[in-house]
Image 1 (cartoon, helix red, strand yellow):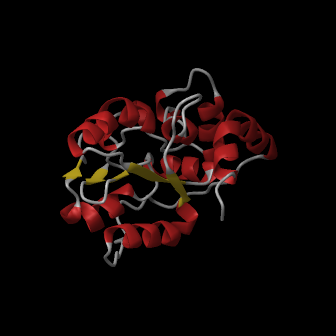
Image 2 (cartoon, rainbow, N blue to C red):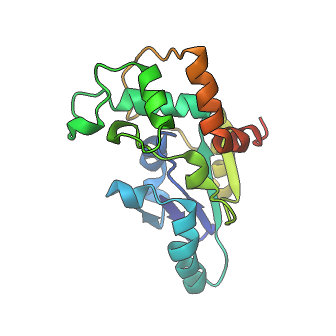
Length: 197
């Protein structure tokens, strides 16, 4: 998460949407950069509005604009699946090595989810039910629009490095799994599809 005091801007770090690259490009300009531990780096909008936002608004005397990126839901799960195939995953229970993407997605759709598939939901992260979400949400697949927004707000050119890239993997899904995903991730798909391309 990055906070820009003068511009009254907060960028939430939605997991698996290029947050490491965004932080690398903008950390030196930010008034506050929370990168560790992951639970703080990836503060969801609900916690931001409950804890961090009120403090910032009280001390600065004004509201902050909250922005974030969202990835197409299947692609987002694919990124998690590939990320957890890395050799350096510290907890074996969270590794997806030796498993198919189809098995991973079915496990994500299960309740409860096994540890390797417990990666949350972008809809819960960005727009919890009945609560305030982010002010501006951009599609990860159209990151250039997000960068242009930031360039306008921060009055500078931004060049994002390519960092934290997950290994390649086969992301094939059986039609039945794809259909199950569409039902289980209905809120995620609805939020993503509401974003103007």
